[in-house]
Amino acid sequence: MMADKPLKVLVACEFSGTVRNAFNALGHDAWSCDILPAEDGSNRHIVGDARDLLNDGWDLLMVAHPPCTRLCLSGLRWLHTPPPGRTLESMWAELDEGAELFSAFWNAPIERVCVENPKMHRHAKARIRNYQEPTQFVQPWWFGEPVFKATGLYLRGLPALTPVDPLTPPVQKSEEGKAWSKIHRASGWNKDRWRERVRFFPGIANAMAAQWGGLVDDSLPMAA
Image (cartoon, rainbow, N blue to C red; front, side, top):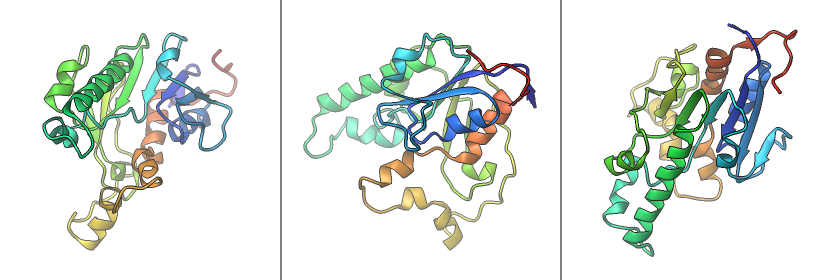
């Protein structure tokens, strides 16, 4: 698909540059923003709170990995029985903070919005302004990567993604299936594992750039 003009794209909550680079590779004016510095040292990365940038005239907002620990269904148990050293009050306070962050992105004054997030529990849904169910859940193997990891996409002003070069998934309990589940099956929690769990998949990122932005004609000027 050839784009009529370059899009000005903000990729929030991303330090890896995966989604940012996919859009830039097709000629768009894409920037990433996170509280962490860019992993690849790119000068197209802003260190800070992405909410401070939402009124800067973006054409598309992609929120790659907002903090979702308290919003996702898998963490519901901590709202009833907090982990050691934590209180119920702190768990619910973090839920409120997470819902407010999601709400800010979902209701941003931007025409096209995608927020990635796992399946949410009912307390999270009730706290998000103008909540809508995710448009779709995608898997990396739909886009040529041998990994099981359901990724929820909350879309506004954007079509659902169409699979590209999908693989045939193995039985999850088979040895090959266990290898495809390596992200979930990784043992322990350390300073490196969390980086892998929040890293976006290149296949999905490339599909987003191609299907939501398209290739920009080289003769067109870069977005201001």
